[in-house]
Length: 147
Ligand code: HEM
Ligand code: HEM
Image (tube, rainbow, N blue to C red; front, side):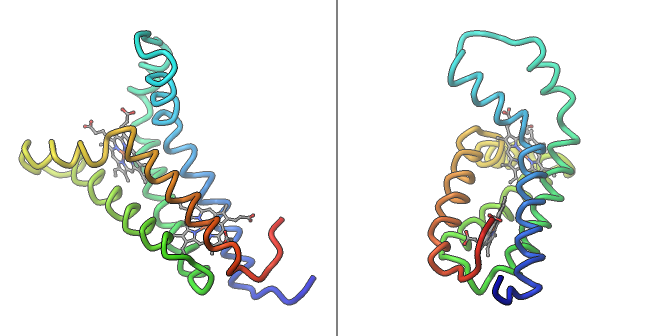
């Protein structure tokens, strides 16, 4: 194998770790979205009770994922695409909005706006699409082999 810089080896490892935390933190979001898409009229008891218990996994899993994504992003910056910048802004926004919703006493009006720009299935879908587009767009720029 050619000389792969240490920063890239660590950066790729952190990319995997980010994906892991992001997936776990948003597992309920993904399942809830699929339920609304496929069975819009049905209620699932286990999903409802999972939703009630998933909060802390969602908050702290996503905070960890965002921090890891930023370190991964800094290490991979020389190969990044324009869409990675959009992704970084979106992740910071979600962290800020989620934190304000949960841990502050912001006025109800403000929280309503934040909820519409955070706690909605389309925000997750937008992030997922930008995430995929950004990583595909940067591939031609990435000179090292990916496993
Ligand atoms: C939730 C956020 C993110 C996740 C889950 C994620 C995930 C990953 C994963 C799993 C890989 C490794 C692929 C492999 O080993 O085959 C990777 C590669 C890469 N990531 Fe990320 N990443 C995220 C955010 C970012 C950000 C913010 C940047 C901005 C610089 C970035 C830039 C890159 C680059 C340049 C590569 C090299 C491969 C390619 O160009 O697609 N990533 N990412
Ligand atoms: C990129 C990361 C994140 C994404 C994609 C995301 C996405 C979502 C989505 C889609 C929902 C609605 C859940 C549903 O009913 O299906 C939600 C709810 C929520 N999220 Fe996040 N989130 C992220 C990060 C965070 C963080 C870091 C925090 C807190 C520190 C947070 C706090 C909350 C809260 C408090 C709710 C419930 C809001 C309410 O209705 O009162 N989120 N999130």
